[in-house]
Length: 454
Image (tube, rainbow, N blue to C red; front, side):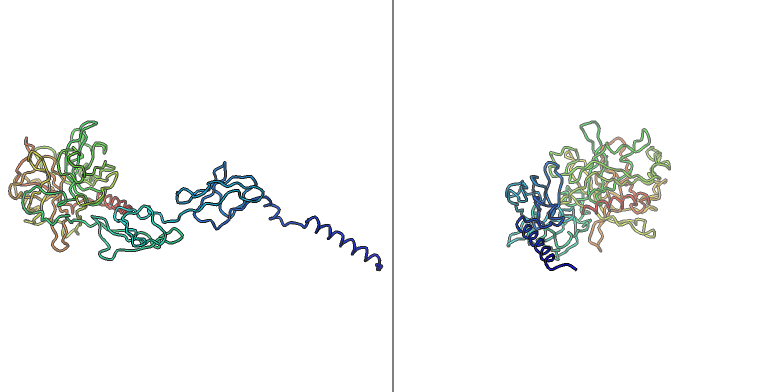
């Protein structure tokens, strides 16, 4: 049994040790405190900053510890210049320098698309297409020219304090077949503004490294999708499709020739892909270019452009509504028009009124005895003049129910003989409703690719 004196000796020793610890501050440290001694911590409450460790330039998260004497570079996450010193130095557990602050706003890039525009409203100030959306600003989304979808109920959203919008930007749909001027396309052969047939394009072929030659017309059905004639891209010598690099498409062209100084608001785009039906290439259609036949089966092509046209008053799409099999054929005497560049010295944009002749009516004419089953004919009204190169353009009719213009046929063939322009009584057109399945599938694919840009 321990004596009383021994117990006192032990207690005295414990007190001596405790007093020594208190004097020296030698309490045991937890592992975290020991590990982070003399380090500096990036606090987590600094919003909108990005920290990069020098010299590695690697991004480090806020809340992490930085070794003694390390340097950290700071920048605003939105790309703005910082308002204070851009670098901090850790010295013995303390930051030398001041943490900068960054303005916060929402990124207007997410508001950009082909089909919409945006208005920024902040403190009763309205700015169209603002580059920087301030916190609490209200955003009003509208449809660009050539698109529709919101009517009088424009979607609204707000830029919140965390730099995000309350909603995702909505998109609009193509507003097809609507001239930007109120004009009927069947009122005689007149020079017209491009806004009266904004879907019409001109297809040019490179004749050398510098010059382009007008070879065909075409119709816009989506910002980067054109419907035209297959023979525009066919090389009759080698009996094959020409390379896409030989072609360029122009929209908003008032003058026929390529000189863009005459049409400063016109837009041009190179060709990314040309889709021609297999039956055009493989069933002897090459014989369709012989003088003894007017067949031209499958003379229709879909062209994908490398960049989309930006719709405006002079450039937008025509409607293309493919009909069910029971409604494929075009009847007699359907009013419509084609747009061409005429025979005047200026070769300017002109409207040519036409009436349709059904397949059966047209086939009864001796010259069209071998008419392909995807064709119908057009009868010129008022002796309208058509010129070489106007093939590929669209025969467009007005739908009184939908109040829109629809693409019904593609000009395929006319007898030019040795003349550059003729007052041809009968034109041959390809019925768009007979577009082959493979061409329709590619066209729908191209339209979906465009829609992703809306």
